[in-house]
Length: 304
Image (cartoon, rainbow, N blue to C red; front, side):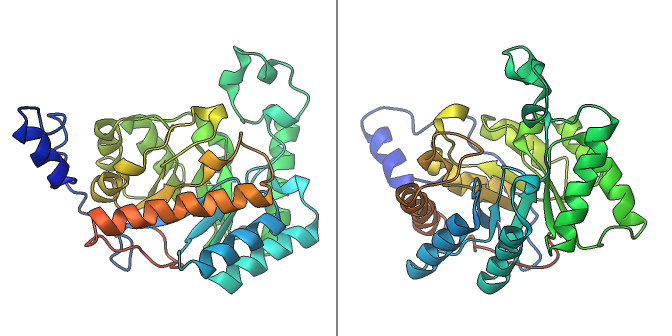
C-alpha cells in the first residue's frame, strides 16, 4: 500500500519518481485486542492541571486520547496530585502512565550533566537509588497508578519479577522510555523478555528500521510523531499512516513539538498547541488511512 496516490501520480506525470523505492514495507499482521491499529499517546503531561485541560480540550474537539504520560517523576508530585491524575484517567477513559524518579539527571550525578556522561541517560546509580525507585513505584501503586514509565533495564527486570511474584499488581503496565536509548531488534527482544509491556524506541529511526523492530516483538511500540526542540524538533505527521500500517499495534506519540523540552510543565498556550497537533495527526490518518481504526482503551494492552 502506498499513501498519497494523487501526489505520486502528479509527480510521475512530470517525469519524476513517485517517491523513494523502499516504501513497500509489509503491513503488520498485529493489532490491539479490539482490532484497532493505532492509539494516541501524549507525552510530557507533567501536572494534573495540564492533564485536565488537555483532556477537556481534546474531548471538546472530538479527539480521542488513549494515553498520557507524566515524565518529571512521581517523587516530584504530592500524593493528592497523583490521585488527581488517576481520577482524570478514570473519568476520561485514558491510560495514565507515570515515571519513576529520581534518576541520574536528578540525583547527585555530575557526570550525567556532561556531554559524554549524558549517555547514561536516566538510569539508576547505586543500590540506594534502586531502593528509592522501587519505593516510588510502590507509592504510585498505592495511590492508584497502574502504568509506569521505566528508564532502567535492571529496574524493569526487578519490577517484572515482583509482578510475577504477586508483590505488584498483575495489571501493572511497564513502558520502556526512549531515554533508555534502544533502537535495534535485539534490544527490543531483550526488553520484552525483561517484562516490557510497551517499548519506546529512540525517536529518529527510519521506517525500515522501525519495521525490523515490529518483526521482532509482539508488544505495542510507542513511536514519536513529533518532538520538542531539545530532541530534534522533527514532525513526522506525513508518516503517521505508515506507522499505523507497518508498526501496528502502535501508540502514536504526538503533541511534544509544542514544548521546548522534556520534563517541563506545559502552559495554557502550549496545551492548546498540543491539542492542535494531536488533531492534525488524527485528521491525517482519517484522510489517508481511514480503514485503520483507532483502538479504544483496553485493560489488556499486549498485542494479539
